Length: 390
Image (cartoon, rainbow, N blue to C red; front, side, top):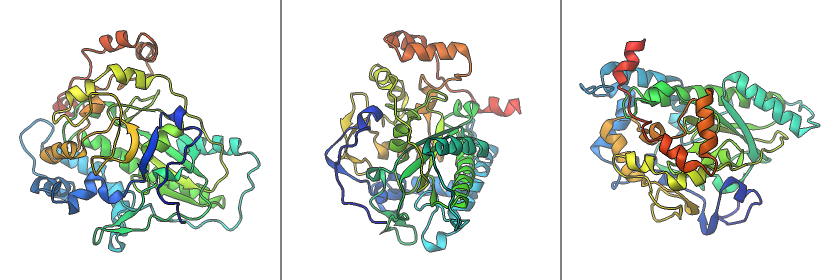
């Protein structure tokens, strides 16, 4: 599938999704994401970043600090296992599937194609099947090629490779996968990294199974995790949530406590519509994530047009982090950090009525009251307390 050159074509649903692109817009090149840069860019790569990646391959260096013991790293790495199996299976072809390449077809497209008379009914069916396989959220949006990577990476030599998809893709199915709240509360720690790894392993399973279901119906379906395109714009366009200062999608059900995956498909589907409820207005007055960031990688001011940082997409007005500062802290701790997720006022259990009431206040003109009520929340829980509960 060939794509148009970088462009800034306005889309009618951009405003509803909170997306604003400018004339300087360029599709992002995956080579420039900070994780990939850590392999080729000497301004990012250090002994610490090499150690960070090695720690996920049984080479972790445990230490006495609470949350960084051998069993903490052991649980984190075990949580990543299924994702790692998928990622590594075609590494000899330069494909880290789910990260630097889409996931290969494990089933062919059926020669007999199910007739779809009602895309709305089919969307409802897909959402039901997604939840059956284990997704917590599911939304559908149009195939917006602005968010596809301009190129992907051949991991054998770190060269640019074509980011091709089959012809005829019309929709993107976006899946949300809830992270464990008790583990998230222990960030930053290797133990908390198990919450990330578990959901990557879960989403690999879910996205592959749902894509296989669609192919069995006779339609193309490409399973995708962090590869192929930027999932956040698709998630907000699919109506799953709103973009926030902490660079995450705030959902009504789980706040920021999710990972996202996606499926590109030719299956006729009705598309969801983004409906902003007030997250941006709340983030405008809240800087808890930026205040808590130990390396000050998150912005304090209003959204700005990005592009000065090589790891930021050009020509989009949004809150943009300093990727180098952020990843430097990951490397220092040898695990991922989500302090910004932990301290976010929307990181709550919305199954309970007090938190639902708080959410209603936060998304209303009483947002300052909601922020004040949140002033003592978001503190770190000692990782050892998690082990004591088991």
